[in-house]
View 1 (cartoon, rainbow, N blue to C red):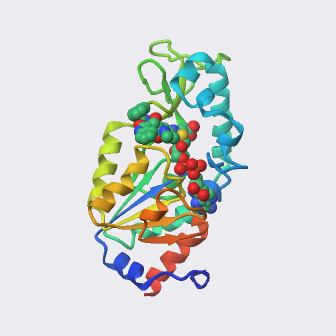
View 2: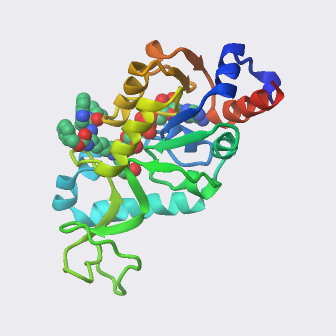
View 3: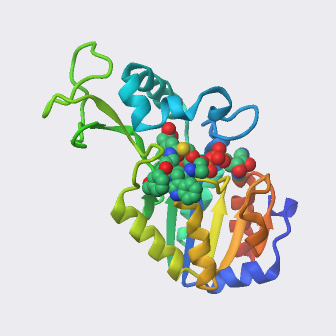
Length: 249
Ligand code: BJW
């Protein structure tokens, strides 16, 4: 497969000597697993659904049933999805460099399912449930047909454990991600439109530290002009080819 891609020798050599690599992933890495992205013109979720009506705390307060049912549908999509060769390549990359941190904006858990261990989930996990008022985690949904169900501890409405617009990211996870970006030799931005903050700021921390910035995406993004290397194409093909090229060098 690496025959289809040419990787600059400087990138391969830098990868072979890097002490620390950070990889920021977005919805694009799961696209080849059948999980829809957000902002692509025809197929993205935000082309069909209004994020202000579904992915804010205010939307949940206005219409909790609509939001709960939309996430139920999304959970079913994720349940049917399996990791693709892009996720698997990142598991292999962890064996080729001393330190690899996967920082994901994705809520689908596919990096962990593929076998990645050092994963920072910036935007939560769609399979987890917590209550709206206190954030009590609920391992098993209460029996009954209330939609959304209520928290067995405090009685407030249950919601998915994801980060909506206007909500803070989990502080400890973000702090660790910033540190990984500031201390890496190579920073990859894979399958993200690089529009949503604070995730989109992480590559800038890496650049400040003089890391090599590599973008993998079939489309240009606002980050493209800052990237040292732009690998244009699907991550499910480019990442496995990159692993092959490192192993062959
Ligand atoms: C492929 C591919 C293939 C396709 N291979 N690639 C600073 C400036 C401006 C605004 C803000 C700012 N700081 C904070 C904000 C506000 C806001 C924000 O960023 N807004 C911008 C949109 C303008 N951020 C927040 O509210 C965040 N909270 C926060 O900062 O709190 C403090 C605060 C609040 C308010 C004001 C100021 C400070 C929270 C952000 C939460 C984002 N939540 C979501 C939903 C999660 C739950 C769910 O899944 O429902 O997270 S929105 C959605 O976007 C989701 C994603 O994780 C996130 C990023 O999307 P991603 O992954 O990049 O997907 P796409 O679809 O955009 O791109 C896919 C890419 O893949 C494309 O480029 C394709 O080309 C590519 N691709 N096939 C490789 N095969």
